Image (cartoon, rainbow, N blue to C red; front, side, top):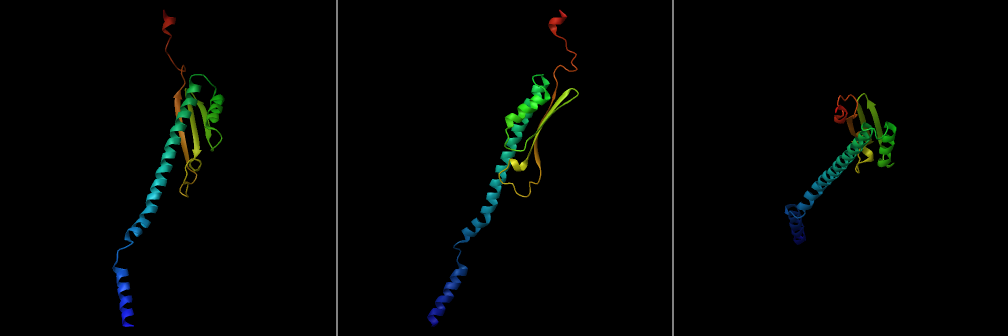
Length: 146
């Protein structure tokens, strides 16, 4: 009987003194943190890519109107066609005096993969203001002066 008690004491003492499995505990603590960082960087990359795309489309729409290639409504329809119907894009093209203002908004939740409660109703915007060519210009054609 005393032999069994001694064995039990040694087993308990070995259990509390041993460091087997300590690396497992560290991994269990750090893996969620590293996973969160990967998810955060993925969402940030998607947002930056989408904002670049929105800026490019806004620039194209403003350019079409500023050079007289399309009307405001035609540029808006052309931009909406390029965007497709996947997300909740809001396209705005407006003429303000000598400038064309084109902007596109889209909710964050339509872009990011890991949308948690922190997103709310935030929107991503890509916009451009462009001068209308030929308006307010005092330049004369060099061929007309000769």
